[in-house]
Amino acid sequence: MIVPHTTPPSDSTPERARAVRKAVVPAAGLGTRFLPATKATPKEMLPVVDKPAIQYVVEEAAAAGLDDVLMITGRHKRAIEDHFDQAFELEQALAAKGDAVRLNAVRDPARLADIHHIRQGDPLGLGHAVLCARHHVGDQPFAVLLGDDLIDPRETLLSRMLEVRDRHEGSVVALMEVPPEQIHLYGCAAVEPSGEDGVVHVTGLVEKPSREDAPSHYAVIGRYVLDPAVFGVLERTPPGRGGEIQLTDALQELAAGGTVHGVVFDGLRYDTGDKADYLRTVVRLACDRADLGPEFVAWLRQFVAGLEEGGESGEGRERLAA
Image 1 (cartoon, rainbow, N blue to C red):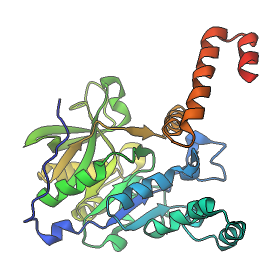
Image 2: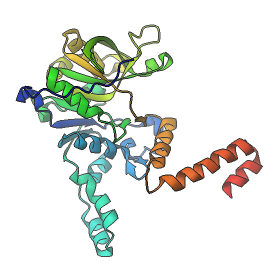
Image 3: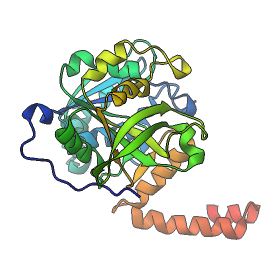
Image 4: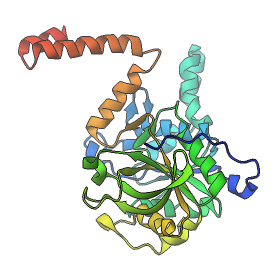
């Protein structure tokens, strides 16, 4: 098994390779798997305990030193912009009550980073969403963070990816080993050893291959550090799977040129991409909270014990309700 790398970045790294300061967060999807909740509320604003999912993503970017965040949104996504803006009336009301805890919680999203928003006019896929960031990013490397993947705040995946970019330039993708029966749900990477622990050369990528056609068990998860060369490739990348411009297809071309590395991640990752995974994420993060965890875990144990004892019977449900 490949273990996470711990090699520190070289002090001789050129300054141009250290210029990653911008993050792009695609958030233009329709969220159809969560209808009807997402009919009027962006999927990215669904609460994970007491914060919207997208706030966890921006917090991760800020913690890695990315202080310029561009969100690619779409129609009916105004709530995302409002969340990361100031709310004067609400802040004044909380200040008047002396509620410092909630006041800071309301102010925190706007203080995380310098946050910008543009709209993806046509829903043409992740590759197109990344291409929409071209004028904002310019000729600098940048990170892309997908909102469906939440990385535990105690992990340092993004910082590690930035270190790999410092040493090797090019682009870096996050990889996670998944069971063969799940590989069709992800982009999949063909890899070769790099000589560094936890770092591989990516020689090819396939978007959602069948189990038989997958080149490995390494799935691409929603973290990328991309060289600006990806924009030129995306411009000439035709629509692929699902009639969308796939970022995986563009990275395949860059990988063929030997400029893509992968960081293998085996830490804590939470998937909010479908209903069951979303519920698991809420439960896991609630259990881990110092202010909620002890009480919630105690109730959860009682709840599970009641399910095991009562099964589907009315008696079991009545006991749990009580």
